[in-house]
Image 1 (cartoon, rainbow, N blue to C red):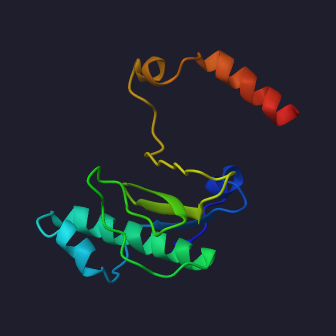
Image 2 (image 1 turned 30 degrees about the horizontal axis):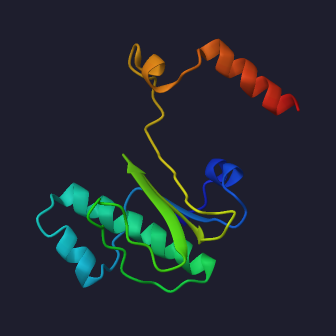
Length: 144
């Protein structure tokens, strides 16, 4: 059920390991992770479990051990020493990306959202460029 997502792989540095799951999997949680979601609804428990499954799969690909990844005080996952990473989830999609911390790789950030049109006027709030400017910029990148 785990697969690698080509689009994210294309934009992440080569030293980053990525794991993606579409849907949910049943996976073992560490006690500290279990206690973090003890009072959560079932949907939250499934996404939490599955995205940690992704993270441990990516950590394994990196050569790092499977460890507990409890949320910290800011709700961000607590990665093992020397590792940077990011987890994301949305409806039907879970992913994690990890890499060894280095001068070239000080953090990783990935995010997933449903592939749907943005509500009216949202693009202006989240992007400083217009659609036309964005398309022209992408065209230059693709042609170079």
